[in-house]
Image (tube, rainbow, N blue to C red; front, side, top):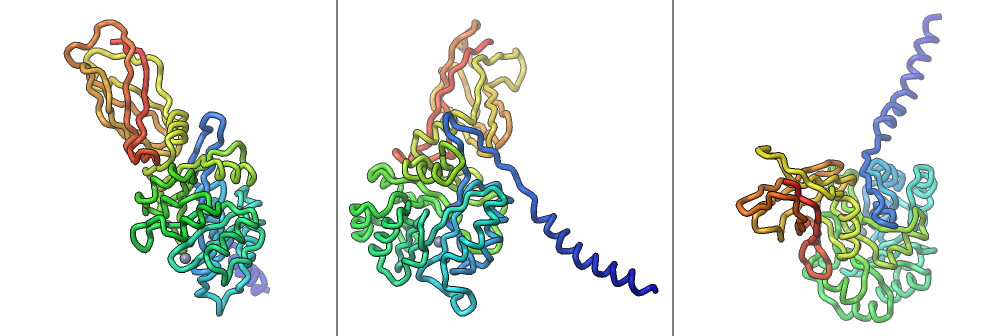
Length: 366
Ligand SMILES: [Zn+2]
Ligand SMILES: [Zn+2]
């Protein structure tokens, strides 16, 4: 008589334990990216690995971690010709997408079919492909041509990972045959500065991805691609990638992109008042900037009136931060229009290699 309830309790505990663990895993850390003008700003990681090539985890795990990190879009891009797990795991490269897709769709994450074309030291990701098994054994140019035939958006991965990148003959041929459209300037924490000028010169799209292989990510530091898309759909994502509306973000501070898109995002996310009042004798006068996003902005004045001193400031995510201003001798006693040019020091504009500079105009009321 006594044994039955005990056995049931044990059963219940057996089922409850994994559910409890699951509960702890399904917590999402929000990283808001409000609209930038007419565009949605999607957080996309379009380069990651699973056990189907040299990654350490099952495809479902990649989807769940993407959900926890508040990503909008992902692509699982296992290597075509690097298969260290082939003794134990299927060689069918359509499986990671097939396994991940229903989970991603259930969680509201866009999932793009992809593959990493892996030929010697030159690796390219091909996205929006139809058949990921069609690339194995081909040489680089044949594989990229196959990707093009399948309607892919392709980009050159980690261009300098084996030493300073150059516009090698294979790259030049691939480019003149219109076989790729982007370059991964940021791969995890690594920035390939030497490839920056090719973005503007060849009209390519800036890419930034985690290339995660491991079972866990460092906190706060997953590199993602911000994509300025017309809507939240695979078609809109593809359109934005081809149009080059992207910013590579290291997940913490660094932002790399074309001037137009860095400016669109910084303008949308840093709201300044039209009027700044100064309280006499108060230490904390300045320009309050409201940052509604998950991005941080490091600001430094590069141009201000001679009678004005502006302190460098960091505007953390989701904050209003006052950029402190001191008025020196010669400051006007009556309201005056002021233009302040602030450098966003944690950005790199691909056209120049220098940080973005934003003007802020306001009426100063001393
Ligand atoms: Zn790999
Ligand atoms: Zn990779």
